[in-house]
Length: 113
Image (cartoon, rainbow, N blue to C red; front, side):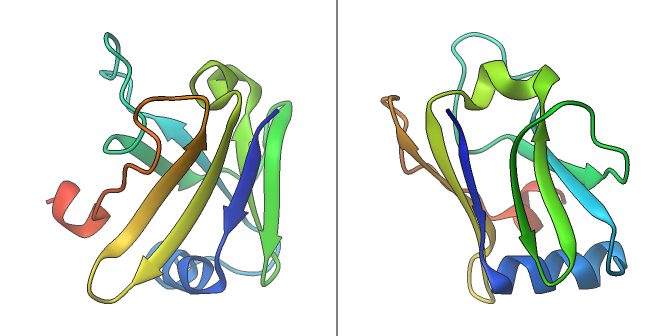
């Protein structure tokens, strides 16, 4: 089971950054280079995805569909993921659930530079 929560602040930031309109979608997925050991936190990615494939977790905020596709379930399974945005920290992913790395976050604005 995967629970995905996107805060209104994160949704607004992603809408502005990705130039999203109502009905668009955004997928969250792990960095392909995140292999062994798998780290939950600093390498999650996002992209516009208006045609999701076998969604395993979703949240809709302000008319935008945020989701995780089946192909990435292995990474997120058994976790609760909260995506948030604050001006001081940027976009952050917080994990809770059955993992020693629970609670890891990343400042995406710094990570993507």
